[in-house]
Image (cartoon, rainbow, N blue to C red; front, side, top):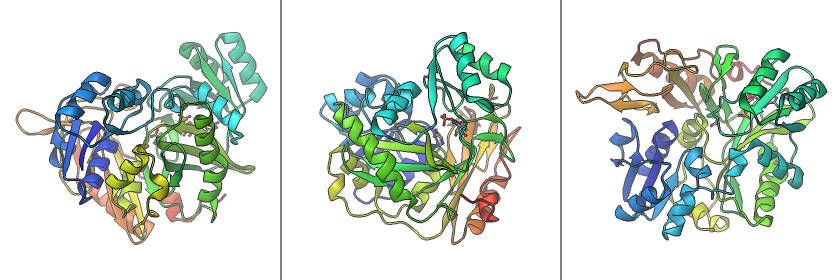
Length: 413
Ligand code: AMP
Ligand code: GLY
């Protein structure tokens, strides 16, 4: 099978590494890719937002399967363009990707499907926003309705800051604060069947101890030893399957990866967000543990044959990934710095590119992540930190506490 992966982040590098290890994947192409994907896949240039261009590239490279990594092309309908060209595509349609593209749409689907989530109000002006803030009280949760690369959400005890964010965004969702550890559950779906992957935890804030602004994610680990037995099945039953069924009922089936972000509150699991694609950095740890060949799995989801796919196989042990971000991320990250040590096994590239002189330089906010597996979470953590310590990037920022509380057994639900 010839597979074309669209995107240029750590998710796409991790996908490429797993696909390259699948013996049925005979040819792997990544576009536009980064310095990491270039080492494992044929690199092609393309504007990932341009559906006709992606479809033309897929035809040119005779792809049997196109995998669209990031949310923006999905929301723009790039998967539809590929399918219209008669090529199988892993990734939801433009309409189905609205589960991520609009927080208000996602809330509407959750409401219709009876999915447990935070109570919320959609607000379009300052008066509505002020009323919603006072209805729910602090801490305030204000979310830009549209795509914002993980940075459109403000959670703050400061009412003035919450209101200012609402006004700056225009259309927002203001919701009840959910307290409890967060879980990311990836569910593969072909529009009717749902296959959960191993649950992971992401670290959204820039600073140790979950301080500072939200980012796209600063690290992750899997599996979650503290998660109650049976919880994954419960989430499939109460969240994933009803959502997939509701999307099918609306005539806009969701096929691809349904990313379910949850908070484990005292009243049970509540959905924090849906994403329409593999999450970053959780993908790095989930795929590091996946033993089943990835190509066949994504193809089954893309072709409506997931129910017939054999059960997923997982490696024993744990995986940890630690993100190295650029100076000044998540504000305006500094780019163009030389990185050394980025070619070690386990380094997953995100914002990197190769300069004309061969040096690998930073080209985005989250630059790379160091991913390692181990028999125990402690062993995986030690290896991931050893790996990231051998990377040099001036002004680079990494959290020192990824997976630490879990390793110490401090998380309970
Ligand atoms: P989202 O983009 O919706 O995932 O929000 C980004 C992050 O903001 C989440 O991972 C949470 O850490 C936090 N967050 C979002 N919604 C809530 C909520 N209702 N209560 C508490 N924290 C939230
Ligand atoms: N890890 C959060 C995200 O991918 O949006």
